[in-house]
Length: 191
Image 1: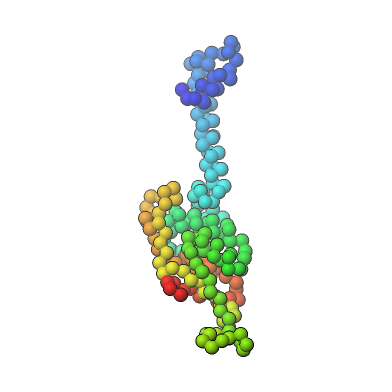
Image 2: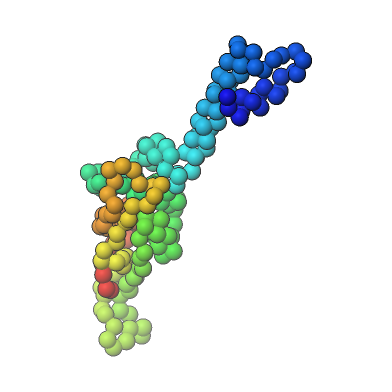
């Protein structure tokens, strides 16, 4: 007997039905089991609504066309796949520094951005770098030389590595999201 079955028995009229009769008791147990399964399935559906829960990950990836074409064949842990889904959902437009820094943060990277400008008379000073006219459209993402993504309880599946490193995911996503007319450079380590 389950607690739910006992609660269902209490709903029966006390004089008309005996909740412990064999056939009625079996029916109540079956209904309690069905309600318990229904509750568990509803909880799973509710969890799948939130991409960061990791539930329904394959469906999220299918809807968002993940993995990105530039990452086909690159091994990704469940955590990195969840981060890719969340970052793609959050990346609904923007071309500002804070937008790209937040996008990288959603992927698990801490970055800074450097912009360039060509030298102009009256603005440039002795010792400034001389960039040509095309540097108006260039910007550099500065990231650590090595970014390690460690496994985390609840977001790691069997067979996932305990840690992975590399910046391919960062380069792929930011290259897709950059303004079309710009030139994106990546700098790793001290910059």
